[in-house]
Amino acid sequence: MRMLYFAWVREAVGTGEEQVTPPAEVSTMADLIDWLSKDEPHATAFADRDRLRTAVDGVFAALDAPIAGASEIAIFPPVTGG
Image (cartoon, rainbow, N blue to C red; front, side):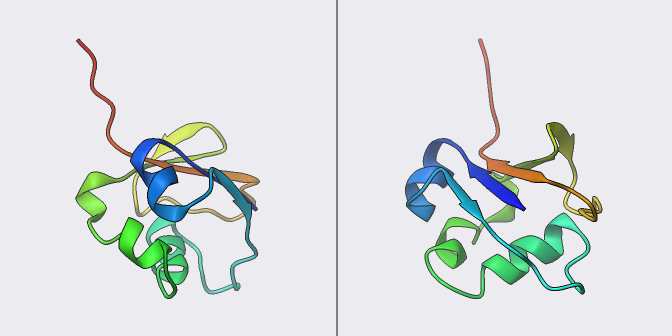
């Protein structure tokens, strides 16, 4: 699956995009973040989940959202406007 990272998350991970193949037991967004966080730089980038927002195939998703069949996952900071 294609992972996309934006803003400071992109800076912390060190890339804006990567391909990953999580194991079958990774079924939710939270599971995916846990799996990616086993190694640096993801562990540091994802340390504070309250500072992360996610999307599955272009649709905002909660951390308990299923990722089965997803082709694209995005992780980014909260967005504010004014």
